[in-house]
Image 1 (tube, rainbow, N blue to C red):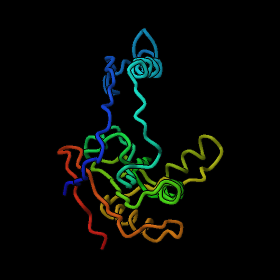
Image 2: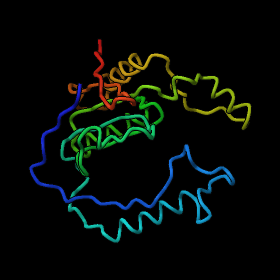
Image 3: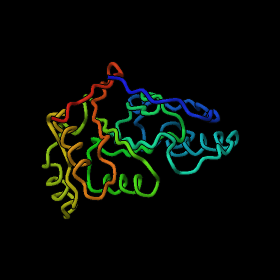
Length: 203
């Protein structure tokens, strides 16, 4: 299923950016950690890109309230270009991302602020195929404890069945006592090979 959002009542100013020849992580030279060329680190390139972006930037005149009153919770995976995949423009939504796109206490915190302070009404949850969390277990925390001498307070939230994890995430949102609007909560799996969303039945 593909999401469709209504067009803006106002046309948002175009957002421009400059491509500065950055490589993907798969082709980053490995001579020295953190360096992608002899001209600086990845962060140096991002700062350079921002300077070029800011030089052409025009204040769009928006406030912090999302135009479409929707919050999207998704995985941090670099293959997910959420705005392009969902037809979203600057100012349309709140985007909350973490490893796996799972609904943690901190995601509930962000959703609560999103709804109660900034007016969102709908929640869209997006996991994806080939997620890195499918290859992890809670042993990851144990290994960290052995390495650094302190057990992480957070759970890895690893899973084996992506559809079931989407259902669990929907349930966590729908049963949260802090959220005002839980009647429009829908979950999807994004296929990283085809770019299509597949809606998951919450039952």
